[in-house]
Length: 135
Length: 134
Image (cartoon, each protein chain N blue to C red):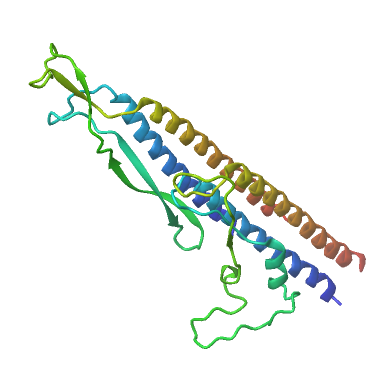
């Protein structure tokens, strides 16, 4: 019976972890805005979320041939595939970070993070309401 | 995978940018120092940034990997009456390009402000996370 509610919370907590991971990657871009030869990185959130929650029909278990191999429950950084975003303008020192784009994405990701927090709060409140109704 | 790593990233960036500002300030202050200690004119300092892995995570911050001295030849000015003049009457002034240094200063302070913004956003998100469910 509680499957529906815990599924919702599991999904949202996975989304929250991925939003935090993306925040980290975008912060790294902003911090390295002046580093020579640094390439701006990002990852596709929708794809990563689908992979993490198993809804993209990929294999659920990773083959492990060595005890040091990470499983699906390991650090999610092992599964996130970051790509290098092509720069807008050529630069002398090989740096591809466009600070305006990066700041926009950083703020956008922060707003989405807060949105996920809001949905999680709603789910928790629903659970609390369900528990109280029984009295 | 946590928002609090963003604090470490922003802190590393702020440190790096403030070292860059220090180097620029040194250069500007010594732009006309003809004879430094040891009898040679001041050499402009440059900082070199490189990516740094935040220990314990896979996030990348930034660090100053080294501070180099500019090896360009000093600026020679003809001042035969100066006590620092060499045999031909030229005084060696530092190779500081003031225009370059001003542009560097603006860029460094702009980046620093951006990193402070980053830290404020991370703090806000963490505070919101703490009030989850209320």
